[in-house]
Length: 460
Image (cartoon, rainbow, N blue to C red):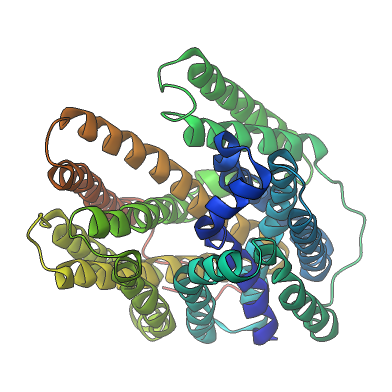
């Protein structure tokens, strides 16, 4: 069953980055260079906003039908993307892929929480994290190879055999005893959650690029996002089976864990975007060498995640995450000290420290949250954590992008390496601030004891 979960996660992880290196070939074939950013944005948007809905449906109707539906929808989107005849079609079909990916990302982690014990889940999260690490290194190279030697359409066609194998294994091996009863689907809440989250992420993705942050479209987008968020609260208070139970966002344990997961996502996206760019523009490394500077994080993250169980079974989930923030803060300090004359090993060290920190923050908080609820809430809790992580990545991309552009404008006329180093330094300081904020959230918001487990057994 673990192999099926890994294959399913690989679908989502690969398609996050595999398209990037094939952009020139895609544009040459389909045209529409001005819209190419939407090929990435619409996938992230569709994936993120649907996660809470899939999490709730997995609690109501079981993980298997939700996961089978998600993989099937993802494969349909992949096939249609490969058959795209223009850029608009590709964008629409990437959205379909994203809608399927939202189910996969949340439900795979929920299934892992169902079938493995608390002691085993750290190791399992290590395996699942390694998929993201390996994909971050191999997917861009694979996408470039397809575009160069075959056709860019194979970027999407390669998903079909992987996904069909995963689908077959899940249908055959995943067995669950779901209590059959009539559920009241919260259609109004689901619609409002989708609209509110879509508007928020759209505003974050487009701000500073498609329109200025203080422009009328930006203000209107965030105002509508806020208004629909208020409507979500009003509707969910009265819903019999709310898509987004409000207690998950008001109690200290889940709310604090989600906040720390959000800031962790912010740190990861900041490093993923700007470290390779800094290595190329400032140190003069080629793309492959710059990618390996980031790859250190992809190695230490799953390693720390796999070892985290030994720590959280002794000192608790919250304290394990605090150890992770010590690594993250150390990483932020290392990156903040980078200069135009810094050796590459300093960047590699910072990347390795950040990976260790993420493995000790993200996995223990997720496993801890899953351990505080029974089967019928685990999908919703897991979906909330995954939503927080992706929302943090969208927020980080927007904030760090705005900071970088602002610093670059202030260094017009300076040598490119000096200007880029100054801009990236500001981003690295922001990552350090996010690491410190994560530690403060864990200390002052998240309780030390994760006690609310369904069987009443305290988990510290």
